[in-house]
Length: 386
Image 1 (cartoon, rainbow, N blue to C red):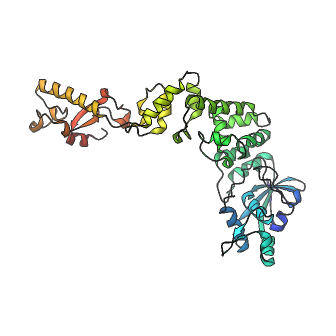
Image 2 (cartoon, rainbow, N blue to C red):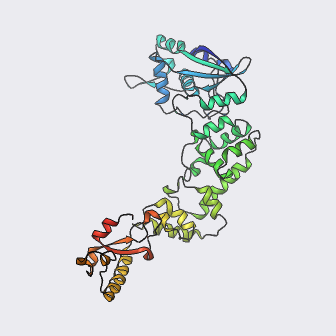
Image 3 (cartoon, helix red, strand yellow):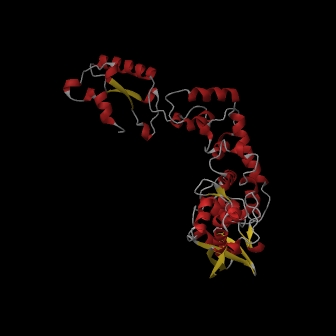
């Protein structure tokens, strides 16, 4: 792969700058000869009034903007490998789509700047490495280059490695903040549209976590019907089983849960009532586990992270142990019964004892009456997770 070092000015780069507010479409510069956001690139994520403004302020203060990387995609064509966030921020400012706040708190657009400051922006020099090579060489370099600013996440890198018709079509559906379904999806999926989180989740679900293989096989097809259908099926199934949306639903492994339980019939009213009961139970420490617990028929109690025995269980176990200990003439604390002579026959009062997991909770022991024993407070503190 061949690389050359060149310099451009902001005026060069922003000549003919076109920016469509719909992410991923129509970002061009150098009079149309520079593709600022190739199909494999991540969406523009600097539009937060901080990072984008910081880029402009750096140019105004004559601070270095870092190194940029372009790929030579044709005789007179270039595409941005690294630097599209910074270039887009500058282009948006120069074309009046971004304002900075001056020392008096007043928004300032490019056209309202003094001529000397406008010229300073226009003359700001960008240091650019231009590379030329095979597709594999370019993609590999893109994957390993030290990305300035916000690091690429895994899905953004995969979009680069497996760029093509499929990535373009999939991003238009799952990485588009204008998609009316995003609000519905956000109840169950963590992350942000412009960081490819929804696309990543859709691919994980449909491929059963074999994302790279799936993207490789579909790379040159623009048909994303299977991807959309499967994702929609999972989302609709969640809504059909759980009629109440809870914040703890966000980010659960819904793809795995769908595969495991979607053929099992559920009564939404009964499910809703059970969820409400569990939400009101002070002993349930892990509310995120409630949904899988209910789907699984309320069997796997560990999903709820219940480590405390309720009072009824403690009273029942205390009575049983005390009765058995009295009949044998030993202490009702099983450990005292085999300990020093002083406490070997001592019958402890309920307030002098604590409930303990026979098989430690941290090692898989259930918080159930079958796994409960009452120990004197001294032995319970000493036992820990043993």
